[in-house]
Image: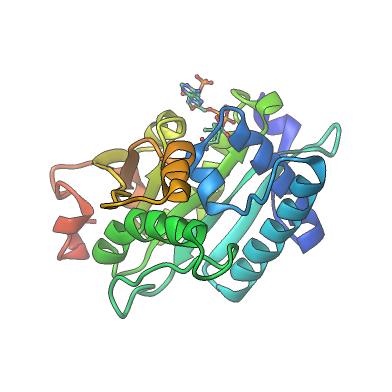
Amino acid sequence: MADSQFEVKVIPTKEEYARLVEVLWAANFNPYNPIFTAVHPISGHTPEDRARDKALDTEVRWNASQKSPFSHLIYVIDKATGEVAGGCEWFIFRENPFPNGPQPIKCTWYPEGTERAEYAERMLSQAFFPRQCWFQRPHAGVNAMGVHPNYRRRGVGRLLMEWGHERIDPLGYESFIEGSPIGRWLYEEYGYRRVMGLHIDFDEPNPSDEWSRLVHECKPPGILLLWRPPRGEWTEKVPPGPWAVTDLTFK
Ligand SMILES: CC(C)(COP(=O)(O)OP(=O)(O)OC[C@H]1O[C@@H](n2cnc3c(N)ncnc32)[C@H](O)[C@@H]1OP(=O)(O)O)[C@@H](O)C(=O)NCCC(=O)NCCS
């Protein structure tokens, strides 16, 4: 059984998080995930570039998580080898995370004013706009899920999902994921359903060469907005989507 071979842990230090970053980069280059390359720093493709970029990625994301009381970085360890098999970030918002309504999301890993920063901001701001509009209430979410290619289809993704559901189900929280087609089947197994597909709009009237290159290399496939009502229970009381939840007694 997969569960006995692996253990799920909260990541204790930045050094340990750096090990997960290695895995997330491997996961997102196999197969190539255009969203990942837009929203993580990529300054080149030599081994030196990779080492520098992963170090910056570790720094930015670890620091952001440390600042948020709602962010939980977790990973799955192979008990036999000590290797990191996969990991993700769970958000468990115990209060309304968007009291000021939807806000643009800033890119801090590319220099301000560059087209790469603008491209990442446009992608993230559009991808997270529905969540910011619909979930102005306590809820949960999963971000940056990845399992190393060598460990796929062995239940590691399931363990990562279960860690969060064990914590949010007693609280009766809804959960929401801006998912990719690859993650979809895992999420659906846990009671998430697609409520909408999202197309990110990068159109520009007179795009520069750099903008056209970014659109070519980093254009995401449709983003699937997946919603799980409290405890994943789809009853006749559940509204058609989170936008229709005006009364939390539907739980
Ligand atoms: C998506 C991902 C995290 C799944 O991790 P995993 O550890 O392989 O998933 P599990 O072994 O726990 O799979 C559980 C179930 O999910 C479904 N599933 C997972 N991967 C699937 C795939 N490629 N195709 C179809 N169903 C899949 C299956 O129902 C599977 O059960 P089964 O293997 O008994 O049939 C992994 O493929 C990955 O890292 N992909 C690249 C990064 C990525 O796209 N992340 C998602 C961002 S939204």
